[in-house]
Length: 327
Image (cartoon, rainbow, N blue to C red; front, side, top):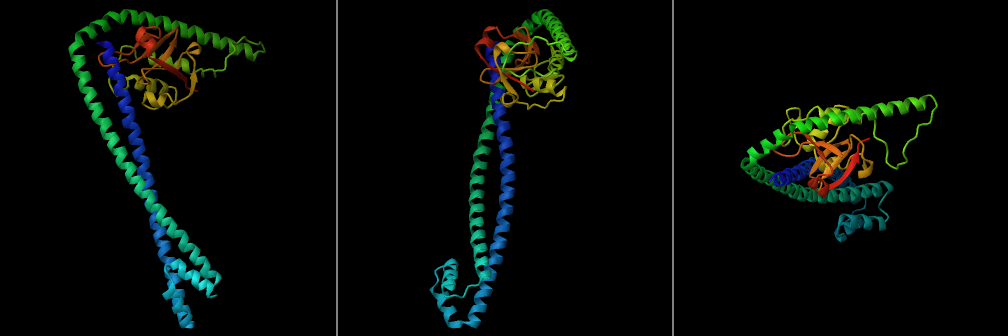
């Protein structure tokens, strides 16, 4: 049952990511539509001005050369054809040719802007429908999650309470491990400053910034905070909200989406994980912060709290996707 809750929570995270992505896409479409409308207005205005100039030129030509100009006008199938006939009749000046080029250009611009508007409106309709579907999916999954949680609420509360002592012990061990690692890094830095070459492991992965230890400490300060879907502040977190908040405390901005967070930083292999790295599970539906020792801190699902888990646990081992290092 708890595994089902985890999968439902992860599925909710995916649906929210789809909803947020659609919202961002709609905002871009609105900006594009606004720009396309502006371009269309400008192109239509300039096209009208060019056509008026051509009309005035034809009147001037007809006044000075009525017979030849009338033949050109009556025999023309279009404005472009008429200018071509005028050119063949040696009646077109360099200025006329320039105006014709402008008319052709703005005609093309009007057509292009019109096509872009049609495409943008069609895309907008599709994205609006996709966002509405994602919203409906979220509401449906939340209803299912609440129903499932209600049926096993007592069991989850008992498990959380029973696990509290173990969580405190793991947190203590993780804090000591992190402090020892930070002390070692400080010693290596000091050795480098005085000219002593410190041994460092050969690796292609970029080393994490020293602030990552602080990220872990901030996340650890939220142990036992209740899981709240959409939560991103002390008092209630979901998985990506906890990661986002912890990094925000050291001045690093991350999106509130496990999918989007997977696109941040650089990839890191499982055997090169360092405290502060982001670890992802269940098709990117879940994310946590690696704290060292094969463990990570995360906000699992409704009814649970921010806690420490092991990468070696069956569900997390089977559903592990990868990790990212924020630089």
